[in-house]
Image (cartoon, rainbow, N blue to C red; front, side):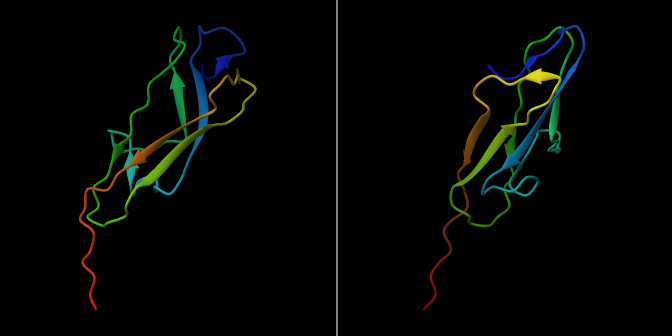
Length: 100
């Protein structure tokens, strides 16, 4: 369900989160506009907002990496469940050749 405002939904609500995992923010993923903020604003009158992240193709083989978004507590809202979401970023670069 995600955060629920402690007051009215008639005002915008800023929800804070942390991005962690083996994938590195800005290096391995970011939002479509190129940013990677640590909060999102739910517009007035709305109950939710969608976030989209895009993988960054860096040319390095890194295998499967994960990114986790964890919601922070705040007095402006009550956290529901789940408190976090995870995504996997599968590398499209070839495995480097072994040299013996």
